[in-house]
Length: 469
Image (cartoon, rainbow, N blue to C red; front, side):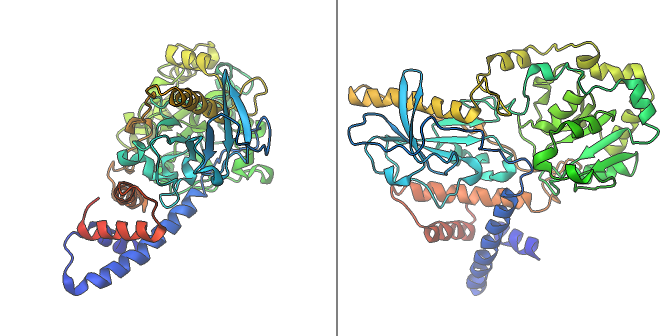
């Protein structure tokens, strides 16, 4: 019922006068329901970033009237920093999550964490001196607004998983290059063959079900054709030990790695499809020495250690075709081990991967020897706005920074079985909702003043009535 009304409201283009009021009412009710469902989905992301690793230099500092440094406001509070000065090279900025500084003449930038970005809560009216900066390393399913060019062009500075962004976070889940050839968890093929008497050749471990990538439906078909051990909450046919059930805490634990290392193949399916959106789904099997069977980023080959380090779903017509290939490798040790040369020979031939890791100036997993990417993002913004702050004082032309669609923009969700937007739950409809929201934002911001939630929802409904999106 919900899907019918939603599609009707979004796709109906000619409203007859006799039912116009009824349809508007339906649109309002279901539009609000869609927003609520989207908020719920945003909260279900399986590996939310931990901000406990982020430590400010000085907490709860006050900014005096005499301080001549640019102010940078986390408009979506993220670091828990109510006020502190931070130095980035020879630049210094005051960072805060206090919105009381909105009108301060020294304010130069507003930072947004993508999953918390809301079109009804923006720092408006926007001054020409105000830069907007986006940090969003998470799945496109968390907020489809960033798949809209109208929204991405609002930002001046970006840190996303896309290599095109100002601070690329593409390799955010790879702790170090040394993890790839490490044999810490590696189980030789002969031992895997022995284990194969009691376990399936393929493992699937996911607890975030019903995703835009429609991964569960593909795996469900595959399970009808060949043995797959499925842990986690999705399609479970084997339980994890009770102390490993919490995915947020344990999916990168030593015990889970030891469990997964026993399997020849690891179904590594991202929850959404977008260039460079690559998570631990890929790096986990590469680390433990199980061959990833990968679906997700269309550009994943650019980041594989070696050309044959993963088996790509896109190269197979259907689950049956894939199953035939996996079973062939399962019975042919020489062919199987061609996918494991990063372990058996310690070989990494991908120069792009090696260069990117060598040049990366941030670390993960609380690396004490490196900053985290949040700090690096703040410094990127600080350096840029501090330079323009000095230029403003000297009446010199400002440097211009502008993000592009390619800094995040992701395609509309399609099913990996059908490659069509139909039959993928409500995800394509949530994407369509974002199309209208982006248009509404653009229209309202063009008026040069702030707007209320009521203004925004009414603008969306007007666009729906007129079939404009």
